[in-house]
Amino acid sequence: MTIANAVSTGTWTIDPTHTEIGFTVRHLMSKVRGKFESFEGTIVTAEDVTASNVEVSVDLSSINTGTADRDAHLRSADFFEVETYPSMTFKSTAIKQESDDEFVLTGDLTIKGVTKPVELEVEFLGEGGDPWGGTRVGVEAKGEISRKEFGIDFNIPVSGDKVMIGDKIKLHIVAEAVLQA
Image 1 (tube, rainbow, N blue to C red):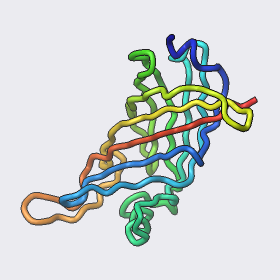
Image 2 (image 1 turned 180 degrees about the horizontal axis):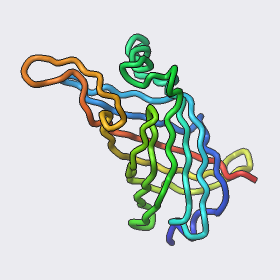
Image 3 (image 1 turned 135 degrees about the horizontal axis):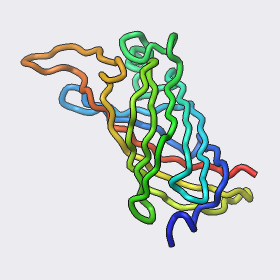
Image 4 (image 1 turned 30 degrees about the horizontal axis):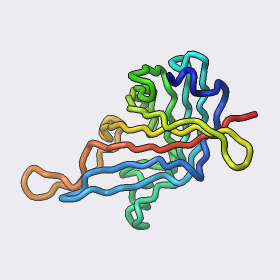
């Protein structure tokens, strides 16, 4: 069975209670993980799955790395500058099917007024009914961006030619969406 036969066509609303938009970044000799607590989005599935599309908006002030001082710094002009740029957005531009349940989703990611193309490796986790009479679909997506390409280049030099914060941000998204009636 291919995904084209497995997914209902229509508009799906991302369920924030069962979705996580997370990231990992290098910090000195470790890695910091975080997520965004507030976001919204839709997935529109077409009969030809490669004609489907995704749109997501993330409230950047909802960042949560588990450390209040760090989160406040990330909201500042050194990083996201949330007073001027309150959200980051993603809008898909292409979907390529790699196998029955694996895809490459290409889209435009906008952070701080800078838009760059991003590729996400997506795994289709399935579709099914829920206990409330609805229909849900699940996906997991992974990708990587350069924060410097979006004008987020704050750093602190450390001994040698090293810096405190890495440039590469690994993205990890696990999403569940509900089919709209």
